[in-house]
Image (cartoon, one colour):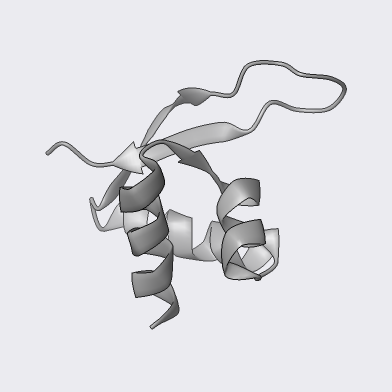
Length: 68
């Protein structure tokens, strides 16, 4: 159920980051990261690149629906 909500948001938004989806679906970034890791492993998602630097801290990884 949570994975489906996450996937629906990714499909709607296109390219997304874990913090963005976590905020939208009201889950912790840790929880969403676990779902993302599983979906990458399952071939549903792929890493697209990194978010443009907008301040201090690490740049977030951008994900999208896998094209394979």
